[in-house]
Structures are given as structure tokens and as C-alpha cells.
Length: 96
Image (tube, rainbow, N blue to C red; front, side):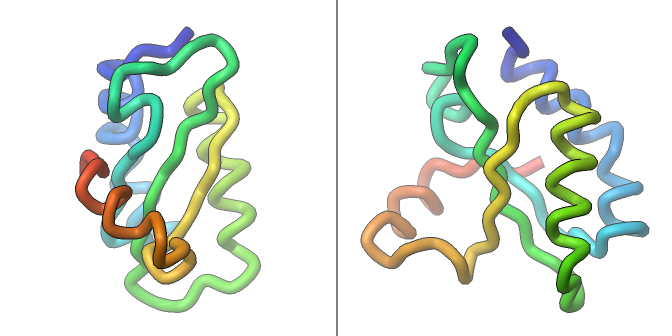
């Protein structure tokens, strides 16, 4: 199982790539990893903000993150969050 510290270390290491190749201006994680309740079946919930529209590259980014981090990724943008859970997620997210 990947630890919270490993996730943070890997995300920090690839942050320049995320910015240059995928136009990620902000990235953070929430959910079980943020609350330290992850288990072997947990995916990593990532919240991203882009500096410009990315279109289908969103899915390329998701695949890149899964391969790089070695765990399943649930990638979302702030605008895609459902209103009923948005406030709770935004309180919980840990930005890198």
C-alpha cells in the first residue's frame, strides 16, 4: 500500500511535468488518503485546476498519474464536483 508521504513525494517530484505538459496549475488529494484511512483497495482522489482548457488530455493525465503513482486515480476538477459534496471536499483537500 502506498503511503500518504509517498504520494506527496511523488506528486512534488512530477509537479513541473504536470504544469508544463498538462497545464496543471494546482493539484491536491482528498478522500481516504487525506484522512489516512486508505487501504489496499483505495484509489487516490485528486483535485486539479488547469491553467487552460485541456480537452481529451484530461484522460491522458489520469493515465499518466496512475502509471507514475502506481495506484488507481479518480481525477476531478473543482467544477465537476457535485454541489452537495463540494464544500466537504474543499475543506479536506491537501494541496501539493
